[in-house]
Image (cartoon, rainbow, N blue to C red; front, top):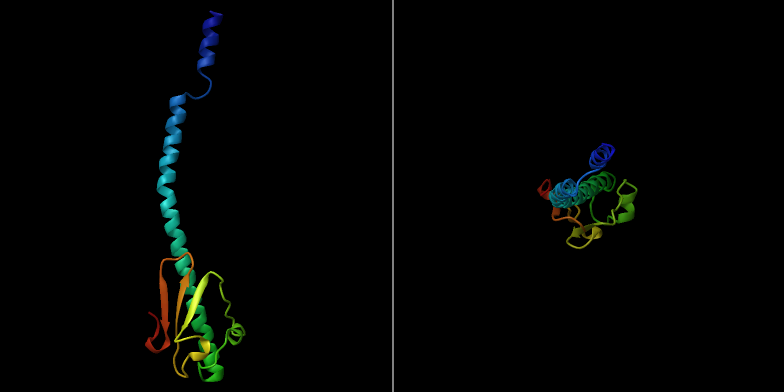
Length: 130
């Protein structure tokens, strides 16, 4: 009788190998679903950062225009006094070739994040973000 109680007590402890395998399989399925979605969210966040940088550049360019009455001759240093900060992961390209090449009445730029999927364009003559 004592042996039977010990066998029953021994069987009741812990999980079986099958139960553990089922749990590991379920976790594996959840991870397989979550990782691609997470990568997509990271790209969306990077694209949002590039778009935000372009909007910040536009606000700084307009603030500079109010004081100088021209877009021509703008530098990164003059924009930094207007609150513009450059993100090292975002590449901003002023059209046609740099800040100082902007015309007196309009400017355009593009922004791309190193980990993003899109390039965003700003054209002040066409009303902003394109």
